[in-house]
Length: 89
Image 1: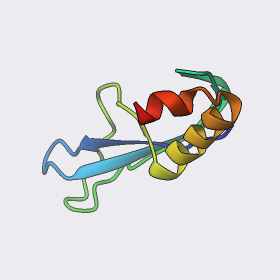
Image 2 (image 1 turned 30 degrees about the horizontal axis):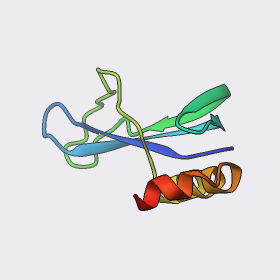
Image 3 (image 1 turned 180 degrees about the vertical axis):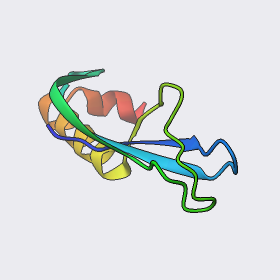
């Protein structure tokens, strides 16, 4: 399943929150996800506020976008119906 992951990181000079997107193919498990194959990544390299080139210096913490989270949740509920009981508890 293709999902969209997003991360935010600060511009070093001005602190503006830049965005990084990652589009991996993921294998969805009952309680985890693993990337399989290659992924496509896009990162803001030039800050729109101050115009400096600021690549990310640290590892980024990516999160699922709301649309991708809904797709993963729907897939898990179809594949493992018993998870619905855990979500209501």
